[in-house]
Length: 166
Image 1 (cartoon, rainbow, N blue to C red):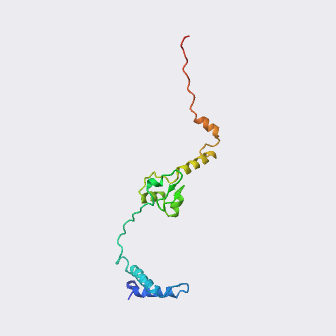
Image 2: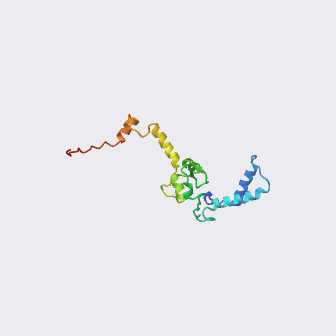
Image 3: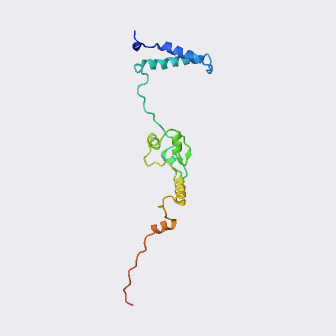
């Protein structure tokens, strides 16, 4: 008999794994928990041994996510954006989304938001913009604030000469 055709007995494997788990000195459990653990171990081993033959869960339906607040309410204040995940206000959602394992694109898709849904509160964005301009970001090298202001001014318009006789 070759080893390729050997099918392990799920009951024996589950029993051996349960015994090994119980013999671990770090395992603290009561006698009431052992039957539940053994049955869960048996079902896990059975699914592994049986492969895809005994599939209990067919294709799972995609989960429908409902936001903690509406999209309109999340953008109601210019000082913060309310997260649809937990309903808390944030100045920027990027770090909050990263801690929840999502990207802004996934967040927008999950809650059915438009592609232009902001990730930063308007007041916070303006404060960051003002601070960046004050330290000189956005200028060409060697350009000062005065030179930039001069370049932005439109050239004065020339007046037509008055040719009326007096």
